[in-house]
Amino acid sequence: MAERGMNRNAQRSIRLLKEAFIELVAEKPLESITVSDVARKADLNRGTFYAHFDNVDDLMRSVMSDTADTMSLFLSKALESGFLEEPLPVLTQVGEYLDQNRELTRKLVESRSAEPFALALKACFREWVQQRISPNTPQEKGVCAMLTDYVAGGVLQTYRSWLVGEYSGMEIGEVNKYLSEFVRSTGRGIADLWLG
Image (cartoon, rainbow, N blue to C red; front, side, top):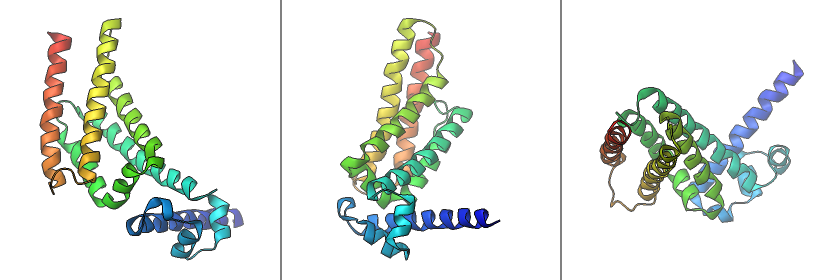
């Protein structure tokens, strides 16, 4: 029973530290956030921080991993829903998540130390596309790899550009509407390529 209580306390501390980090990301540059800042914001001591994380970068990687897991869940739903034929429901979920966590995700994509986060999302998307298309020949495998890069890179770069404000205040719903049309067009092109 005591172990259960410790486990709950550890989970609570980790949650508080992550929440504090996310709040701090909204207030100051990632590079200037310290262990003391996070511990103070979480109303915990530095020892509790170090019981769960090696440093702020370790905490950031954990927060990025949580975000990547959420995106992976969305992509799993996409696989089941026929994303290339009707991408809007999945894009809406992803867009709403990014919009609700805009400050954090914007800072993550702008930070050089977040490169592994972007690569993890791209790899997740790549895996999804490769599961969706079943190439039979070496040429089809090459085309599938190109398509994967095209779809994954395009969707993720579009969201990155929106996060950093490159679309003149365009709302996420409008971004998703256009993205949905682009992805659907890509899906029709794939059908023509594979069946044509």
